[in-house]
Length: 468
Image (cartoon, rainbow, N blue to C red; front, side, top):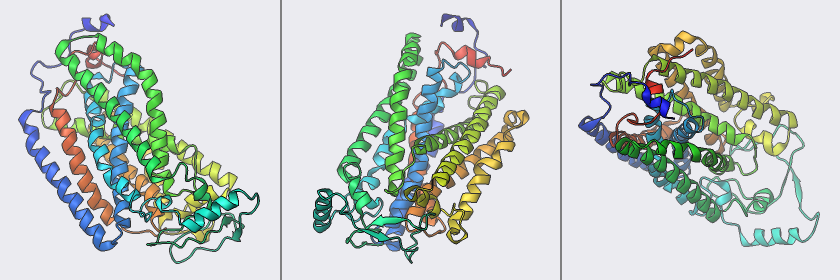
């Protein structure tokens, strides 16, 4: 590793790499906007639905969006250490700070946990209490093979529930009535109760966030520590740990995606959903990095450490993850459509992504918008070399990708509310609230250390980096 220290740093001696006091006015504005936004969302959610069901869904949309950026930041840092990448060293501190926002995201998970213990299934249908007569009947059925009672599937009702593609779909009967517009518990959900219950769900969330917070803060603190003591062994240690930590990280990310989003429909399952969510995380973090460095350089920071070559590489990664998102999205849809299992197909039917004309609804247009906006349009748009090397065009595509990533998260979550399409006004208010608090936290971490590592042994490689 010592050969990297022999190169001279190709940056200007007076390059500004510390935000200083200039960050505090923006920090205060973001913090105030966040607090006001959250309070406004709570007030609007109360007047729209006294059970706060509409608020919980809107909140989860924006929460999952910013969680994906933070998770993408952690994944970026781990991947750079795992591959011993040199080009990205000067951009890595910004990603480390994104991951370091995980503690505030852990605190912002409180409304999700609260929804579990309201005993009405406002957000997660499976979080409703199990009535004594249903629980007793379920236990009795469990001791009598073949005693489960089946009823014929009814068509979609006024509550917006859709049916699966299979016309002969059947579901297990329960006597528990729906409350506050929440679909009732049934035998399928009761059989999953050992996993999908409020206490165990909360324990899993605590485990996920405890690991993510430790991981993000450990890499950020070690990177900052190296700025002070110039110890190359810190990089060696972080690289050595990146392998096993990456495995644990992807395991927790996958199960968190299952818990937070996929379990909104407790009947549905997809083994590819974890990688689908992870792909969105990577799109979000690379698009965010492009915007962060563009903004910093317009304000006079990092003018030499990040150049056209780095933007080119970030653009290549944006293109690669755009292609991969299209591949994963198509694979998930194609395999579920081909197998035609009711518990799987119903998820796409709720979103209007069905081959039957009677299933077309407002969400069908969102599905088409994602097909074109998340894949078919940005794929050729990012294909050319000059697009990735021209900052203005790359910023345009970064904004485009972030907008459609938010739409993708909205499309994954909101149809489970009641199946109806609606204008996302409350989602936008929640977005402002969470965005303000998240960005304020991000600014604090950017302001606590130089904007790029000072003594990473691969820094000189990043400063003289050239694309082939």
